[in-house]
Amino acid sequence: VSQSRYTGFIKEVRFEDNQFVRRGDTLVIIDNNEYQSHLDLALAEEETAKKEITIIEKSVSTINSTTFSKNNELDAAKAEVWKTKLEFERYSKLFKEEAATAQQLEKVRTDYETAKAKYNQIIHTIQSIKLNTTEAAAKVPKAKSIVKSKVAAVKNASLFLSYTIITAPYDGWVGKRTLQPGQLDKEGQNLVAVVSKEKWIVANFKETQIQYLKNGQVS
Image (cartoon, rainbow, N blue to C red):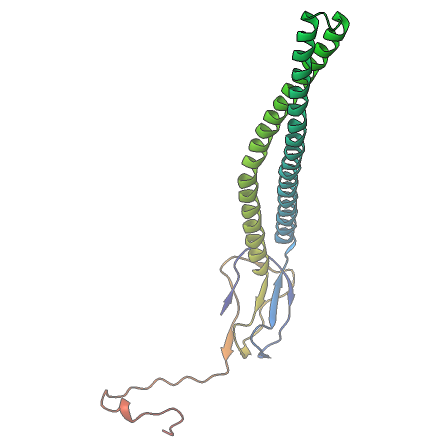
């Protein structure tokens, strides 16, 4: 006997009295608007969650790329600091020896201070980027967990939607049709009985007789 797994109105009845049916044949369709809506919503939420994790992963990738670029800039800035420092020290010595003017010394001092400021600015930027990387990376596990929950919700919604289609559990004959489209079907209600085409015989044998029994043996 096939039973309904939820309450709803019968949409279609696809069998007649005493009809022979095959396993998997659709016998009854119950209105599925509610469960179809649940599935559509679950699918939309799953898609949104997957897009969100893609955005987060791209953000982490972009930040890592920026960090690599800034590290290259840091190397160049460090070299510039070293270069301008040597130049400043050289002109400081020349100025003391009155071999350089105050304007020349001030220029190399400015170049040196500018180089140090740029170097420190890049360091600060890299530190900020690392912090952003950590924060973005921390969102990935949570986002993946949300995706898993949405996938599970889709499977659950699909399962409930499948309950709106009643199929034959095996080959056999259905009983008398008592269902009509539009009829209210309640959860647990017997919808249709299918009598298997296989024949079963109940017989009692003594334990000493079992050894003489074989498949296909004529009784």
